[in-house]
Image (cartoon, rainbow, N blue to C red):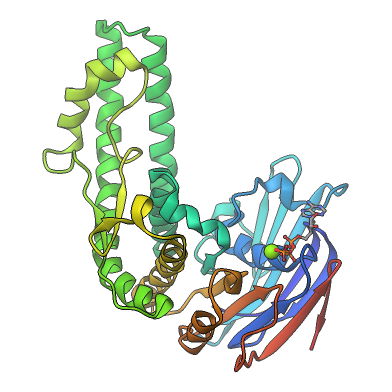
Length: 359
Ligand SMILES: Nc1ncnc2c1ncn2[C@@H]1O[C@H](COP(=O)(O)OP(=O)(O)OP(=O)(O)O)[C@@H](O)[C@H]1O
Ligand SMILES: [Mg+2]
């Protein structure tokens, strides 16, 4: 979907805002702390119903207000779309599509897709395995909203299983065993489905990641992305059974897709522990650009690319190279510094104290 216009009410520092985007590149500029990231975050919210900064929904509502509204108008395959989401302090969030209230806010997923990059994404390389699993799962949700259901089913089963393990106090009686059998069957179905989806995704991502990295870092390096859950060969059912005693003793589920790692290897060395700061930044951006390309290819439409503060991550030469090779489709980028030379955005939005002006 191509975004044309965005309206905000009481979102973050914005009281009211009405913003128009270019079909190609929109640059959001202004000094620190004025609301640039907030604007990108609002677009991201309509796509994922969450904050790409990982902020809780409450933080998105303007201090003192009791709800925030994000509305956007756009076009997909020649058809007009109007998306609206309301974020409430009481947690009851609502959404509308073309003025029709949706039964669940989550039904909005899939209407708009975004790829968001922010400086926090360094955690994709430096952070814990959970950060990298999150990256894969978000990309899967962008590919198909059914993965959101799968992910929440899995979370629920793991919570129930964890509660049972703790309650049992490490003792295995017939009742605990019976309940674990039921949970493990469910965990196996959902867990194997998610792991297979992640694995297929990584197979698609790996070669694109290499190209994207070379483009961003202006080098030629071998990048490998490996997702090989240790349990996949014999199946999750067998692995859960083998780990049962250990799980009971420790009171946690020690095996499954919630423990898996996506290994990133740069020029033969683990990127998390060996890559330089600059290499890690380039790799983080390349991960987002690669996901963007996979989603574009598989869905036939490029997501809206949100690049928050991207030039603070790159030197001038790499910034210019990135601008030269932006993927097709719409890009919204924010920057507190000057735009690199040669940048010709279709629209420049200036943000100051929560007020956006064009030009
Ligand atoms: N819920 C909220 N209510 C009111 N103000 C908020 C809320 N959340 C954030 N803000 C304010 O929004 C302001 C702008 O934040 P934002 O992160 O968009 O700035 P920015 O322009 O991206 O700055 P930088 O260049 O430093 O990244 C901050 O000063 C913050 O205090
Ligand atoms: Mg910012």
